[in-house]
Image (cartoon, rainbow, N blue to C red; front, side, top):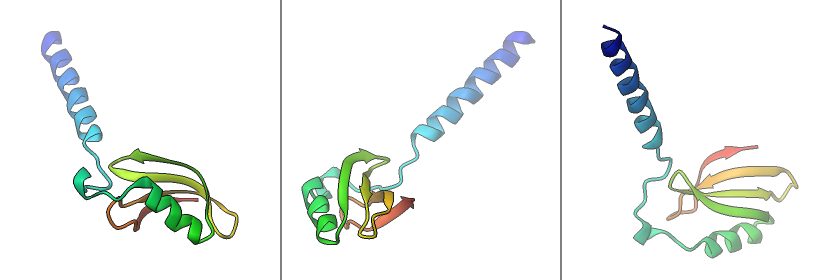
Length: 88
């Protein structure tokens, strides 16, 4: 009985880890992505001061200060550059 409970707990943990790993905020094929440099230039033209851009959850994740000088962490669709998530 203990072996059955252990096996169920292990498979439950594995399933929850797999489900979490599959979460993708932006689902755009890499071939359709615009370059990071284009996003950086677009944001700089709007008065943003870029600290860092990286890829996370299938999106471009940007750490910056916006035109108002506020610190921003924002996720951008890599094809359209639309903000899909923002944390201030």
